[in-house]
Each structure stands twice: as C-alpha cells, then as structure tokens.
Amino acid sequence: MPSTLSLNEIGGALFALALLIALVVWLLQPPDRRLSSEPGRVGKLVSGWTWKGQTPMSFVVLRTLFWMYVVGVLLTIGSIASRAPRDPDAEHPVPFTTRNGQVYYVERWLGRAIDLAIPVGGILLAGVATTGWLNRRQLKRYDREAG
Image: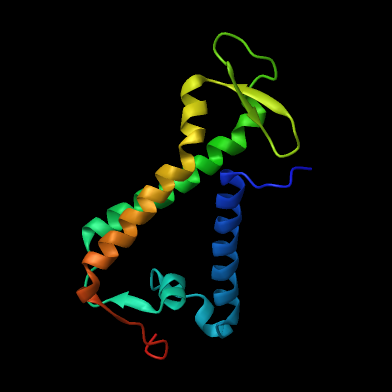
C-alpha cells in the first residue's frame, strides 16, 4: 500500500469533503426547510453570502463550467475500467493505474487530459473565486431567518 497520496487522490478527497459538508448543512436544517424551491440554498447556507440582485453572468458561466467539468472528469475516469483495454496497442499506449492496482491503457489525448484534470479544475475554481471577488460589492450576508 503506497504511503503517499497522488494529486488525483487529494482532489477526490477534497471533493468528497465538500459533498460531506453540504450534506451535513442540509441535515442540520429543520425538516420543513430542507426542501425549497429557491435555487442555491445549500450554497448560501455554507458560504453565508448571497447576491443582492441578479447573479453576475461571468460568475454563473464559470460556476456552470466548473461543475460540468467536475462531472465530466468523474464520468470519464469512472468509465475507463469499462472501456479501456488491459494490454497496450497502437491506439492505447498510455497506462492508467486504478486504486486497486489494475492497469488500463488509454489514448494519448486521454492520458494528457487526466494529467491536467486537477490543474484545469483548479484554474476554473480560481476563476469562480476571482469573479466572486471582483463582484464582491454585489454580495450581502445571507439572512437564514428570511429564507
């Protein structure tokens, strides 16, 4: 068993921690307030901030791209075991090792994409944070009692 964690394992652990925090916040709400037609309720509760008016379009676009990217990366990496060969060939020369030690071989472009998954996700997340920072005058504290 390896004693060090890879960058992908650290990213996965941080993502799992974020999901756990969102679940705990949701569970700690009163049962009548857990389901709401208001979008972004859990995010407001976790961050403690909301937008005064309409959410800036740059923030919406980057946030949507970030979450689409995260889902895409998870689906892609999760599907490697079901579609990648276990023996290298001309089309699949790049090895990809899973947590259980099984080695699959993927295309060159997919190997590069997997290597860049965490840095690109970090850049998108930094973009979301930057747009939030640049539009900070449009933020206000979220009043939990107001709903």
